Length: 180
Image (cartoon, rainbow, N blue to C red):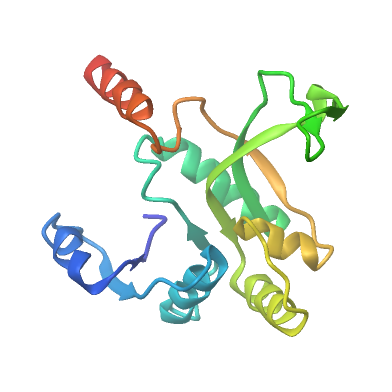
């Protein structure tokens, strides 16, 4: 199997939810931090240091397909870091503070990133050191690796691997799950 252990970053009162699922892997817990990068750092501290990869996945993305995760693992082994993503379908506009269009980036170069974001532990460790030393704020995990100037491979994922943040997202997820 590709997964040795699972580290859940959550408040203590939610641990029982994860323990009750009956996961057949080692299950560990870490506490959330102030920002996403702090939560990831806390989780990373609990990881087995002999692991060949660390995969960071949002629990708000429950529709991840196993084959997409495995493809992302394989790309991370080859490139050092990889993230699932899909080509952007919509035209994206960059705007100023008054919501006036500043520019339109070329859609062909834009990808919407998802999770998992998979990184070799030694790279992630170096990245966290740089982020802390330079007091950087990053919005996703592979941005930490980008700060090192190291390559990050985008592994083509699936448009159904949506992040559930609105009631509409939940309805879409329910319809996807009932189709299967």
